[in-house]
Image (cartoon, rainbow over all chains, first blue to last red; front, side, top):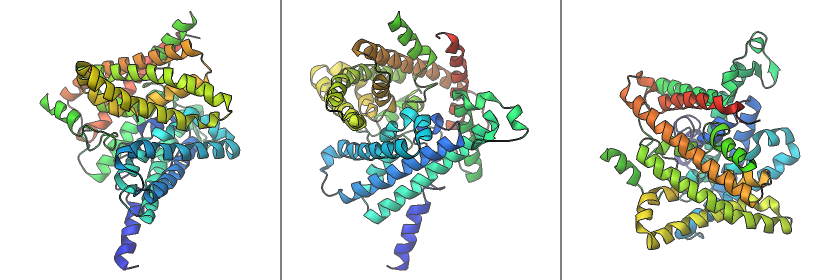
Amino acid sequence: MSDKAKKGSLYELTKGIIKENPVLVGLLGMCPTLAVTNQAINGLGMGIATTFVLVCSNIVISLLKKVIPSTVRLPSFIVIIAGFVTLIEFLMKGYLPAIYSALGIFLPLITVNCIILGRAEAFASKNSVLASALDGLGMGIGFTLALFVMASIREVLGSGTFMGLKIPVLCDNSMLMFIMPAGGFFVLGVIIAVVNKIANKKPPQTLGCAGCPHAATCQNMGACEGEEKAE
Amino acid sequence: MEYILILVGTVLVNNIVLSQFMGICAFLGVSKQMKNSLGMGAAVIFVMVCATLCTYPIYILLDKFEITYLKTVAFILVIALFVQMVEMILKKVMPPLYKALGIYLPLITTNCAVLGVTITNVDESYNLAQSVINALGTGLGFTLALLLFSGVRSKIDDSKIPETFRGVPATLIAASIVSLSFMGFSGLIG
């Protein structure tokens, strides 16, 4: 292993955590980000479940990249991902029943999380097994972190607790709005704005095709973007 | 009466986008123009109802062999195949409709709202009629949210917003306010 290769694999791991954070920079996987983050522990559980599926599916898809014909690759990817989702459902049901019931329908919905299919299409189907595994792990950690931060803010402000522990002054003056759906949109909007400010870059003006969660699966690349421009 | 309750519940009270958080990606991506919102909404309603009709017999089959834990795999595969098939058939048989819905169809496979509805139907153990009503209501709710929000967004684009909040952050905060207004419906059904 040369020095350059080592640096490369470290980059694959760390890029997903901040620089290409799937939620805050890539704007992917919004649905679980908003839905399960009313308690820090749920955010953490969702993040770990997604990371597990992401790493496993990246490894398998990378191994099978020469076997899967490109015309049927998307259904194949989805089936592989759905298989691992079923696995994690069983594991969670067995070992973490409380989180399992809190996550509810969003656990099977990991299957259609745009981050996983996006990484499969954009990275795992083109790169080596090791690089894909690290990429999956990095992206998963980035997703988990984003979820955990957001869930902590919402739990502390909304119910005055953190990981179930009461916080002295806040728990008597909780702002219920933050654990309601409206609070989810609000907190995510503010976090993205703050990240933009810190990164000192222009916020994404439009989702466009680059930021479109469906870019990986979209067969009409640019069609929708063209229409917006025509306006 | 029961059907009306399901319909009202899914369109207004438990609106799929604004209180269930499904289909957010499509909601943020397509709600820029009224016309696109309508097209996407129509495509979603159509796919949801048909996917419900397809997955209902499949679940009965899975249940018979006691392998219901495979529902996620089976459902998503059916939805993916179905969307692909509809696209091909529409292209051949009804070109005008394909032109109207065409761009939105491939996006729907990965729209979590569609898989979400089929799984909700199973979890709530709805019968066929209830499932179809549920799918229809959810689709209508999705369209309503998209249409309302496209109106809000055209106003945001015209207003002066601090640099950091421009674009996606402002859109999310506006969505938060729209979602807040939908909370007013929460007392509508018991």
